[in-house]
Amino acid sequence: MINFLNDYNDKGHEKVYEFLERLPQDKMSGYGQDDYTLAVKEKIKKEIERDDILVEFLPGGTIVNIVACTNNLRPYEAIICAKTGHISIHETAAIEATGHKLVTITAENGKLTPDLLRKELELFGAETNVIPKIVYISNTSEAGTVYSIKEIKALHKLCKDYDCYLYVDGARLAVAMAVENFTLNELANSCDAFTIGGTKNGALFGEILVVVEDKLKERLRNHMKQKGAIMAKGFILAAQFDALFDDGLYYQLGKNSYESARALSDGLLKLGVSFTYPPESNQLFIKLSDKQIEEVRKFANIDLESLGGYEASLRLCTSYRTTKEEVAEFLEKLEKIL
Image (cartoon, rainbow, N blue to C red; front, side):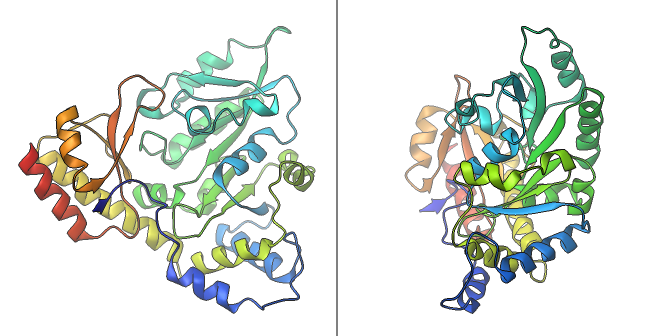
């Protein structure tokens, strides 16, 4: 079966296992305080070219979003995101379960803009309102669209005007970087906190949380511990990112995912297939009839996604392991169905 179901359906890149094998069998300190983990954190800081940031390794996407979005928020402070945002539709109200309201904005193609955000922020201020404090975006977005650094900077500037923080969920950051060709340093200079996703780009599991804004660093590890986000064997996470940021592997894997998606989307366009959202990243959303989708399921693992709406689209998701042969075979078989 051709697999376009998701980008986390493998056991991890081979180099990650090589680095895990290098770890000693015992006598490693726990909870991310060992010398090795601390050294890898310094490696990430050098990669970002900022020594004033806070770097933490967390086990997964939902828990890192909970930690990043709620640390140091007062009970009446809220988080803003697009209606199609990952924390809005794919995390079982994890944010709301912490006691903070999620304010959602209907955004074209899944992306917030300064105009949309300003209109929403201007509605708040009375003592009967929650007060927005964190603005959440993901790059790539849940609709597969991509923010440029210029767009992120514009959102960050507006956040500063309204005393908010901008947080970028980078679960698929490697793909966004391949599309827009920006650096981690540029991203760090354009927001208050962001994540570097590993789960969907070669790691067994794990994400890096990077905190730029000093106020968001306060007692972060206490918050992490309370939320169950600190692993006793933290060095397992560190080793994976040590591997991914060795000799540019992280970026190459993201590029592989994107190039496969580019070939797939080009082929779909030639077949006259309609897209629900602009085909910009490794998540492609296309419109097929129920009968056609049933036929596709006979040769491909695929997913239907409504992004919180009522009408589902067929989502095709490439990964760093997607091959040219898989793309060509899928297009050939789809053409016969069409």
